[in-house]
Length: 473
Ligand SMILES: NC(=O)C1=CN([C@@H]2O[C@H](COP(=O)(O)OP(=O)(O)OC[C@H]3O[C@@H](n4cnc5c(N)ncnc54)[C@H](O)[C@@H]3O)[C@@H](O)[C@H]2O)[C@H](O)CC1
Ligand SMILES: [K+]
Image (cartoon, helix red, strand yellow):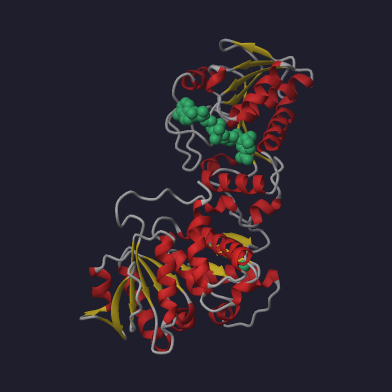
């Protein structure tokens, strides 16, 4: 699995692509650099296809790629015509503006209408497209499709939905030069696709960065951002579920219930006294139903009650549309229950727990840890955050590493805070994104806490995580 896996999977949807671009930018690789590489690639591929080129240029990033390609093709001695059917002031991207100016200085002819050429290059609508092509892109796509020329699409055919491949009116490309990674919409067109490396460093794919905080926007109705129940605590460990619950609330869950034996006073949280599998006068399932819970965090501090409770939670999850976080004691009993979790759960083991989950001993070697994370994900059908100095997040065929955090985060309670944050984010996003954003944000918060206060206590993490989550929009 590990050898042929691409880190973030084979196809990158629009959000994953944006995440990787942001991660690259944070590593010092500018959009201008990527656009230059993208356009140069297109020119190189296109040059052998004819002597005259008509380049249809939109007002977004893909238009910028087209303008770079135009300049390079002109330098290569081709006859190049650019059709830019917008006003210059409609361009929002600085890099595209710059490349329009540069194209003007490079022997490119600007034309006002559709003109004959050997090759048509589609630089109209890329990953920024919303809905069906509108005028003037629509007419230009239609005209291209009616015209006999070799047709090259940059990134994806204009008009196609990048994530679904949906295509009512699409540029009919003979060749598609896609940037960095194929988009899911191209799945059935792969025989026409060339993947161009545009200078995005491997690190931006392999490691989490600020781009991985691109969560779905918050819902606007109360409850649409998660109704979380934290089920944990025992006579011996009373604090763990409360830390987890507070973390969930501060990370943005709308409502957080704590099903635990002992009360602690946090006015933001709702306490339900739990004795074994009874919650107040109800069974666990009745309580979950009554509280209309859609995310369950189970495990923190559960101790000897873990088996019975985790079993019941998994039964409930099978019937109901809920997401799960399994942590701590619930991880220990999971192999015994042997249940698959149907890709709606996140497991948050450290190395010891991972080793128990797999029933084999593990070392700290990065390769072994990556394999372990994949194996756990596979066997339980769940996303995994394997915590450690370098965290591994694995989910089906995707895997990323994380280096945020520090050695101050070994103190008690940081794991509880992490599981609470995952719970909150599962309330509004899918497991892969909840797991990625949590792992990056909790580690980053640890760094900020140590910088500002000299410690990374759970309390500080809980206060800092929301700021980190909020730092990328
Ligand atoms: N992946 C990378 O690292 C890089 C990709 N690049 C290229 O940039 C585009 C994405 O750029 P973006 O500006 O986000 O989007 P578009 O180029 O697709 O521009 C959209 C543009 O069109 C307008 N629009 C949206 N929907 C419609 C519609 N249905 N009909 C008409 N017009 C529409 C919208 O208002 C925008 O103005 C990516 O695909 C790559 O090709 C860069 O090279 C940088 C690196
Ligand atoms: K870490």
